Length: 326
Ligand code: NAD
Image (cartoon, rainbow, N blue to C red; front, side):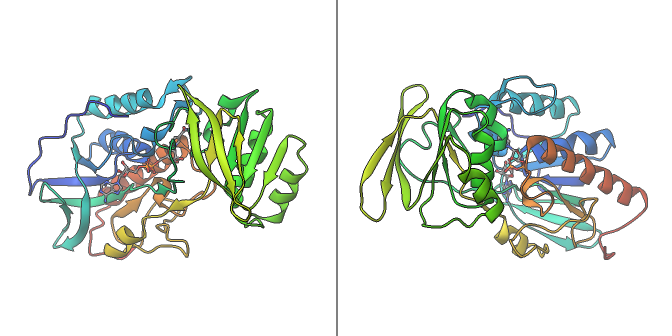
């Protein structure tokens, strides 16, 4: 999915109060508030909308009833445009302290200076990398059970994975779908036993172990998922309208390491309750942080962005500078 987007006319060397790195829901939530606090803001991100570009219908953001994800991106984008926040489509390679500023180095447009940085680089959801996955993304292929479960009321679905998200997803989906196939490539689950027990007791969940998805097929939407038993190589076709890929995330470990951002044991950027990182005047929000792991929503990403913006405004107002330790 692509949306028409005009990249900002900014030039290397320009100076800002805050630079937001990323262009997903967390970035838009941040920008709305930095703009309202009258911080001179620049957003630098690779993909307008972030993970929303892979979603279909969104019905879990208060006030946006049954919007297509592309329209949610447009709504978020237009709100930020209203506040005249420039948005530059580029990749941030790194940032470093220099005098009273952070210098942000981009891949294409050169370097920018800023008093504060708000990191909203998100995560990458692991993919199955099988035929049909990309083609049917948002049309039956989902990466978020909590987000999309209600869309599959009265249908049959597959959930793929063996960790907490997959089992929690299967449990939730069993309340909406008539049948849930839980497909896992190993012979035991990594998820907490309490989830395994809960799912095993559901009459409409069929657990299929030692199996992988080999193909997703359909017309306008998903119609069939092919799986293969990795032990006996037998294939089976499941007639379903949805497949939930819950096989984990890749946190921004390299980005954090390159920029001296402290992470937790899983690689997520550590933040305090006010979204401050270990670096002075550097904040983080959204999926890239270690906050609220296991409950990641547009609404939570946007809220974290608003809080990060408030903290940046407050710290600048109180005269904090980049040389101070948090
Ligand atoms: P995100 O992953 O959506 O956005 C991250 C952004 O940062 C992307 O635009 C990415 O291209 C950009 N980026 C990454 N590295 C960069 C770099 N070095 N330089 C510049 N840009 C870089 O993450 P988010 O904004 O934290 O929030 C996403 C939230 O939306 C999540 O909580 C997710 O669960 C939720 N979501 C919900 C639905 C739904 O259907 N309800 C669908 C998709 C996502």
